Each structure stands twice: as C-alpha cells, then as structure tokens.
Image (tube, rainbow, N blue to C red; front, top):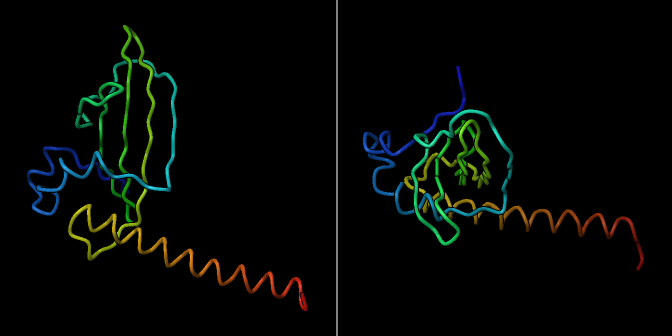
Length: 136
C-alpha cells in the first residue's frame, strides 16, 4: 500500500475536514523544515494534481500530501516546452497531529512543538557544555 495520499481540490470537497481550510491556508503554509528540487522532465507537467494561483512571480501550483507522520505542502512552478518541462518544487513539512482539525491548528501545533524542542535541546546543550568544561 502506498503511504502518500494526495488531497486535491476535488477530494477536499468530499471531505468535511478539509473543505473550508484547503483554499485559504494551503498556499500560506510555511515551515522551517523545507525541501527543494528543480530540474527538467520529459512529457507534460502534472498540472491536474495541483491547485493553481497567480502570484507575484507567476503561477504557483499547490498540493497537499499526507503520510502517516507528516503533512507537506508542495509549491510547484513550471515552464512547459514542447516535449519536456522545467520545474521548481518547494515542499513545506509539518508533523501531523491527530487532534488538529484544520491547517491553522496544524501550523500552531508545529510551532508549539518546535518551541518545546528548542527548550529541550537548549537544556541538553547546556548540560553538555557544563560537563565538557567543569569549573569554568
């Protein structure tokens, strides 16, 4: 079984959980955890899989993809040629929390999760520094 489940605009209309928040929040979801890829591929671009919106630097397609642990929002820019296309894709990654009902709650939960992680990391780092340099 495939772990990835794409949720496009048509699927959102059939799912009450994502019906209201898909259009508004999906294109505005930014994360510290990002992946980026660009290149060329042969054939036609997968424009039907994305929801397209005009922005300052051109048209941007957005797709929401869920796995068991993460949710990512792919932002795609393409330039279609006759037999191939150029693409630039940036994915914003979020930890999936089961109690979150919409993307705004997922964003807030990830911010809180990140702040808690920073506090724990700071305490561990401080303990390592004290242990590494005793008496200073």
